[in-house]
Image (cartoon, rainbow, N blue to C red; front, side, top):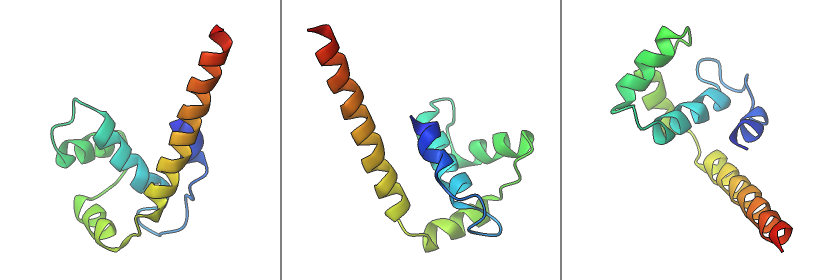
Amino acid sequence: MVKDILKSLPKNDYPVLNSRLFVECWLGYSLDNSLSSMRNLFKRLNNTGIDVDISTFSKANKHRSQEIFQKNYKKLNKLVQNKSHKKLHNKY
């Protein structure tokens, strides 16, 4: 479900840290229990060839709108509700 939502995010809207990578960073940090800090996330990304600087990410956090997260949160909620609704009706 998350991958489908991420596909809809633009990859070229910002020159250094596009919206898709920005949201992926936040999702990765919030969903991965093995990460104890944002620095760990950026080390992991940099080791895999994704060049993201923590200061760039910090600046993006200050200036980006929260609307992208709100829209995607609503989309995910709808998808989850639809899936659970279908599962309930398939059981009976």
